Image 1: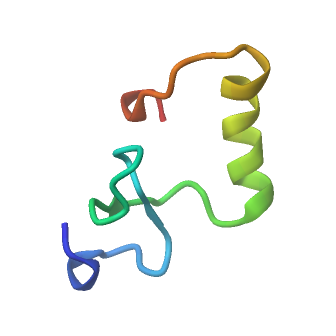
Image 2: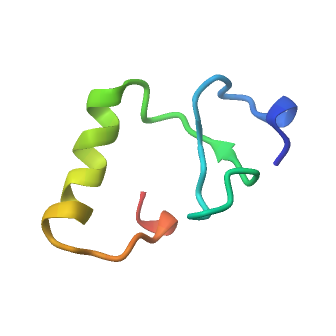
Length: 54
């Protein structure tokens, strides 16, 4: 998705690790605290990242 196609802009998600060009709309995460709440589980439990889990 191109940045100009995002409906949730400026809130979006880079869903492919290492490829910041790929974006998708994000309607749930609106601030840094919300982001940290989501990634905390991956960090603490050493889980691999899978964008389908979000």
